[in-house]
Length: 180
Image 1 (cartoon, helix red, strand yellow):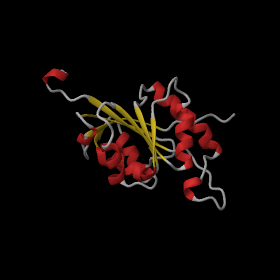
Image 2 (cartoon, one colour):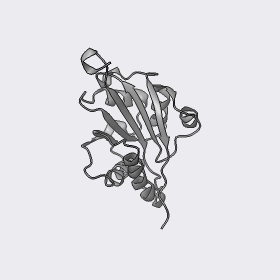
Image 3 (tube, one colour):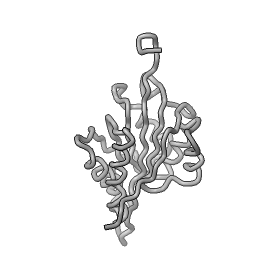
């Protein structure tokens, strides 16, 4: 079936949990920066996204410092990063908040990246994925660690068509940078 006969385009939602953060004394949660391991892992996440051909057309990123740093370091690994929208509501977001943000994405975007936090991101992946390749869904149920990347594929005309249970979890990876 092709686009003329009514096929819905394949869309991908790429979910990236921020890299490992530091816990400096007296720093409010939203202002916590990446830890040394996070500073290594975030670029590795960018490389993994490029190698998996999962570069986004648009990124939505939490305004928390650790999420912004993750985005900046990951996207610096690509030739030309896509536009990014920093979304305050992605900080401490639950599934309903995350889906609301996703549903507002323009229909021209085929691959969307969301950079945020747990437990919301893990719950989003579990809510949207009706099935997975291999045992990826079981792995997410066990743990969605820092720097984890989940790729969900689904067919839809607009992002509003993405509803629970309609996506296939096609990839799960947890990139780690090397110590120098």
